[in-house]
Length: 190
Image 1 (cartoon, rainbow, N blue to C red):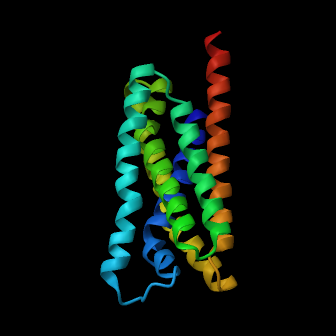
Image 2: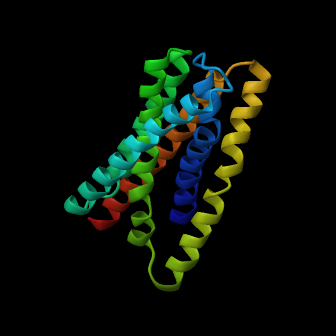
């Protein structure tokens, strides 16, 4: 059951990660930037990922120092979920949307940096190899579902806001699964 739960968590992160990653240039173009101004779109796309690289190192380092793993996955996922809500509510306002994109990328990369320590807490030996492979295989299906979900909703509604609400909900569910895993692990250790 824990392996399937971790599959669901990783899938939720990958849906959000790939959805935003593939659609970020279009999201930035929606700010009113000329679609042919590739330099400006590229430079603005760089900012959230640069901040995410710093946040990922800080979160991973703090997790290693404290030895705590669960909250170092849960909180960044909640930050990414809040960023998606912010992106949906900001409309095409450039600065609030860039802050929201930074929250999304920072949250997702920070959660991913610590996530892979969770399977090691539950699995060992051959079970760890098979479990990690299964989690990775199922989770990476998010690379299909995330961009496709945004594209389908964007086409159906002529807007991205509903897609961002959907991705936010998916990340929130993933974070709740980690909360439940943490509670069950704490109960088993007592």
